[in-house]
Length: 138
Image (tube, rainbow, N blue to C red):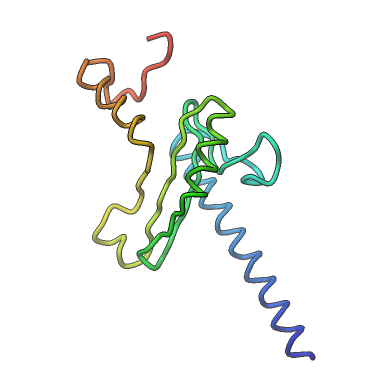
């Protein structure tokens, strides 16, 4: 029984360490992107997804194994939460470990129609990559 309790406590400690690591990762991404980390990451109404930017609501995933699984339910969730906030949805994918030495470590997945609109704006001269996305006033 002592071994079972120790295993259970070890699992709880591991989950707490993972949560701390995830929170730190989300905070670093938010700072890098000029946004805010969403406390609770979906646990509280109005604070859904991981990171809020001026025009995007992002979830994030990271791996040290070189593989990130994303299912349709996760994509539907971030799309739904972003639509509720009148923001564009996105997913930040972060690779760590060996794969990050030979591949860009951070990627962003956005819906094709959002990307297509960004391409159109850039082609029309309304999107300067050095200045970010245009605002409604532009």
